[in-house]
Amino acid sequence: MSLDQNLFTLLLTPNSSDSSGLVTDLTDPSGNVHYRKRRVPGKVYRIEVYDPISESLLASATSPSATSKHKTVELYNPSKVIELKYTGTLTFRWSFKWEQHEFEWKREECFMIRKPDPPVMVAVTKEPPGRIKTASIQILDYNLNRFDIDDRKGLEIVILTALLTFQDASDSYHEAPNDNNATSAATTSALKGFTEMTARKVSSGPTYSPPVPPPKPGPKKGVERVAEIQASRGEVNEVLIVEECSPKDYARYCARMLHDEAMMFISIRSAGASQVPKVLQVVEETKRYRHKAGDKDLYQYVLYDTIQMSRKGPKTINLDDNKANGTPGSNIVVHLSKIDMP
Image (cartoon, rainbow, N blue to C red):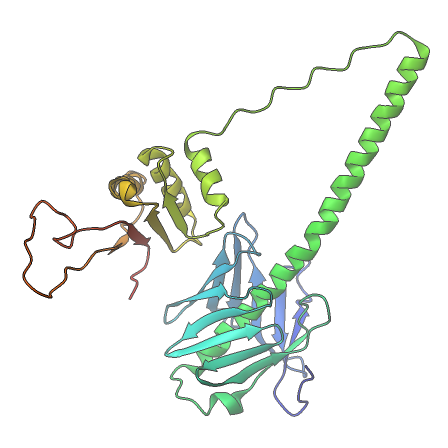
């Protein structure tokens, strides 16, 4: 989408004094820097957005990797946590909430969602075809001014921070095929050399039996098996408790997830009624592991799948019947959170 030349525009330019390529400045057309983004090296993905004059930290975005479909954006002074989630299926779409409003990024445009009314565009960028490589962005203040938003500056920072994570994710996606091609080329070269060497040996001397292949690795057990089960589901923050593996194995896996600074909460869900007691064991073991490690206590929220009693007509109640007493039914979900969830 073309940009309006009459509107205030921010340009994304690499910082001239940074040789690592991890720092990006958001400048106006005159060269004045309004925001500065720095990507923090490490195993988990994290970027930080600063005020260039005071060098104060304005916001950060974290996730297990740059391509994760769930990112946590945190604003500072005052502190506020925003969940940025990928909500698209076949199209690019990321959603977040600010105050009482919902917003969606759709490729080059960010909208305020007003169901059943049509959405209102609040930001626009200019992207090249095929990948996200943002060069400029405009915040449409004339549309934002139509709505009751208390912290408009905070919303602007969230919109910009989200956009900066999209570009990092796009870079990671497009770098991966190159790495795979390089690996494939190296593997092909090695196989070709091995084949030629084997042919020379056959033609010049006695034949040799091929080396015995190494034994196949056995099935995974313990925490590694739990991780394998959860990876097949594709849920980032949710742990499904099934009959396989012990409560302690699940608890170690949950404690490992919560040890990640980017993981603000997890949901522990039973696969059926028979796994409800096991979920409660996993929750207690997880909290015990965190206590032994000296980590902060967690907020705990429990949701039961209960069966309500019918009020029509007299009915004899069996006091030994758990369902009649409104106790847990077929499933349970326990949310363990580092932050207070409203």
